[in-house]
Structures are given as C-alpha cells and as structure tokens.
Length: 400
Ligand code: C5P
Image 1: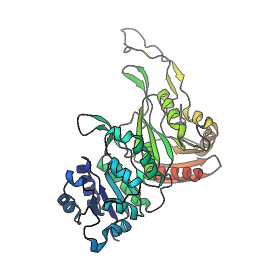
Image 2: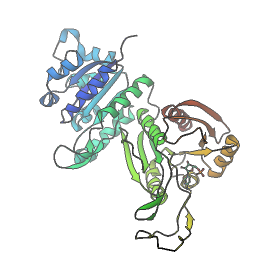
Image 3: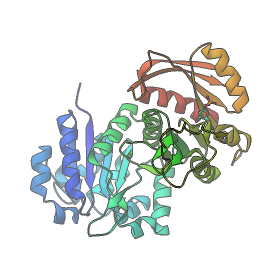
Image 4: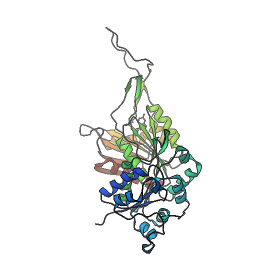
C-alpha cells in the first residue's frame, strides 16, 4: 500500500519551529509529507530544514517548478492537509478563498480533510474577524483546533499557543483514519463533561472518586476530529488538553452544573461522562478539621447534589439538543440501565458493567448504548475512542 500523503502547510508564526516535530512524527510513522510553507514561515524556519526533514522539494510560490503544475497536483493528491501553525492571516486568506501563494492554492484544490492548528496572540484569536473566519472554515467542514492556553511568544500568557505537536499528530491520524468522509459534526457545538467531582470538607480534604477522565477526553478528541466545536468540562483530571478543544476546569458538582448550564445554551449535544458525586458535605469547614485527644470524630453529614444530567435533559437549552448520560452498573445491567434512562430523561445512556474486572483509568472500555427509542447498540471491548465514535455516530444520526 502507498503511504498516506500529507501536506503540511506552515504559516509565518514563531510556532513554525514546533511544526518540525510534527513533521518528524508524520514521516517516522510512515506518511509521505510535502511541506508548503508561506514566504513568511521561511523567516522563522528555512527551506533547507523542511526539505531535509521531509525528503521532498519545498516551494512557497506557484511560480516555482511551473512545469509540474504543483499548485494543482499537490492539493489534489493529498489525503490530508494540516496547517500548523495557522496564523490569523492564513485563516483569513483560507476563509476568503484567496490563492496568492502555493499554500492557499493547495487549500483550494484539496478535496481531503483539512486541519488548521492556529497559533497567534490572544487578541488576534479573539478578534471578531478571526472568529468569523474560523466559523466560516468550520462550516465548510475544515477542522479548526482550539489553540492552547499558556505562555505566548514573550512574557505574556493566554489563549493562542499552538496545541502540542503530539496532539496535532493524533488529530491528523484520526482524520486520516476517517478518510475523506464528511466531518459529520461540522458546524455543531458539543459539550462533554469528564473526570470526577471533588466535594471539599475543609481546605485540604474532599470526597472524590477514581474517575480518570479518559473516556470524556476520548469523546472530546473524537468530536473535534469529526469537525465539532467542543467544550470540555474537566473535573479534576490530570490529562493534557486535547487539541482543538475548549477546556473549562471545574471542581465540584455545583461548579460543573454552572459551567454546563452556561456552555449548553448553544450546544447541539451534551454528553455527561463525568462521575458526579451524588452527595456533598453539608458543612464546609473553613479551617482544617482537627483531631482532639480522647474525642470521637463528628459524624459526617451529607446533602444531595443536583442531578445535572436529569436537569439538562428536562430543560433542554435548545430544541433538538441531544443529551447523553453514562451509567456504571454492577448487576442486571440492561434492566437497570433502561430504568435509569427513563429516570434521567436523556436520549442515550452508555451503560458499562463495573466490578472486579474493571479498573478505573483503563485505556479500554466495553458498553451498551441504550436509546430512548428502545434501541440497543453494543460496543465490543476496545479503545475508549471506539466507544466515543459509536456515541457520536448515534448523536450525529439524531441531529440529522
Ligand atoms: O445516577 P448515576 O450517578 O448512576 O448517573 C450517572 C450519570 O448521571 C452520568 O452521566 C453522570 O454524569 C450523571 N450525573 C449527574 N449529576 C449527578 C449524578 C450523576 O449529572 N448528581
């Protein structure tokens, strides 16, 4: 089989040097990569570096090697075009269909999945012009990753960093695996919760659970790869931010509820993969609770937390919004799952059997997805991403 052909477009930003690592990952994992930098990208990293790392000729203008008509051939032959870093200028030119250099020509001739990994200063990312360009590109089916937050070029920090090369590489692989299929969640906004809530007792102690967040992160990554704008409500996770995803950290169930109600207002789907504490301490001690010699500890009084899933399902922020829950059951999995689906009022419930065989934080999962229409979709033992994709298949079908 021939190697998958990837075009790596490089925009003129300081993060261009990070594209070298992305290029290495792509070539070392068996992809044929043609690097198409913009003229300003070459001010940061020279053509010799791109040519040496890719083993392919490098050109920025359509006037180079005209006899081969590369501006048409490169785009048409590609299985994936990834642009990293995508500058504000490049996003604008792509959104408006300009074709004033080899990369923008390639973007117009490509008929394969296109992935943009933006990097720019926070102000440029947040400017309405850039927001509109990103919306336009997404509505046409391109996947535009959300930039990461953190240290920018100078001493400043904020949203605008290029997502980590390893994360961009993963997004590339997922898009290639999906092939030229339409990104079926393009133009959709999905909200996913992940991890486990922590309910504080005092400044140093909490009631928590062992949820790693891996299933929720897999849902977020796969939704982004299918073209969705993703908001990930991350409850106490220790996982790297998935590329292309807007991550909102939360701590307690009450905070998760607030963040969810806010994010869900314009969401097409809400997926509650987080393990939410059913109860929280009735009283929060503002100072550390002390043990006293000869004294028995006070019994711990608890109060109920809101059922966020049931509330989201009952008061849909938007007509047609699809609401998905997760349930872990130890016995009578399907019967208990069905009862829970009705109780919660959601459209889909992903039911896992838990017990000694299941370890929290595992890479794999196995489940049955129950539908409010009576459907049952078994998902065999496999990576959490496969289960995530099965959930999105059902969500996409419901969204029409
Ligand atoms: O009731 P149970 O905890 O088994 O339900 C699990 C599902 O409900 C998960 O989707 C979880 O995110 C959600 N849930 C919730 N609010 C709670 C408890 C659970 O949204 N207080």
